[in-house]
Image (cartoon, rainbow, N blue to C red; front, side, top):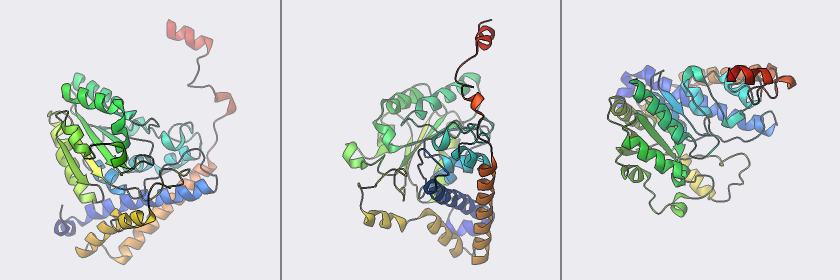
Length: 334
């Protein structure tokens, strides 16, 4: 989609913008709630990377599977998991996606085939390979989209997963969210080859580098790659070159990069860039944007109210799903 076609497909363009705004405003509010100690534990924000999740999700069908990282709130929201359930999980409430047991890093929803949220760097890669293998063995035509950061490239699971997916022609779309820093180490300080798409190509995967700050570029690439994967051509790989505007986590003092660098990347804010494209195509005005912002703000406030009013898991359920009672052991053995 070009700037010109955005004017023709105004509804789609506004939908993309709205989804990016939902993720951005949700994450900003989560930072506030964390500072107020309403959200505890770890918190990894997606601010700056919204175009990746929003763009890729356009290419996926409801029955496709998604495996994400611990920076997954945006993926979950765009996938269609209710914001109320995501916020309740952040609050540690039983109404959350994982009954409040997983928190920020372990959003899960079987109904939307959203399989994590995974706190282990690279841990989702073999899970995605397994999901895709199951689909292929059953003859089911669908895609497993696996999101991971460039830091996972240093893990053995990355190389094993690339190799098996290519060897077995599995329907996996690998989506590397390359934000340049893993946790706090610049890519060129940890990898001799910084072109991640070339690493995937070494395993005979069709691989494309994509401007991850351009939601339209991401959508185009994801549609092309997912159609190829869905059609039986084997796995595909997208290196989505993006940038997180905030620190790695709320605990990160962010001493590894200069403020000037962050400011330079902020000039390519995906929401600002796309808003300007829509305005140039006469597809967005101040009133429309204000209405959109108001609707997003209301949704977030409703999610907070829901999470705040939700119940904590009862103390007597503390070992539920963790240990088995003697009767459950006998039943399982019978």
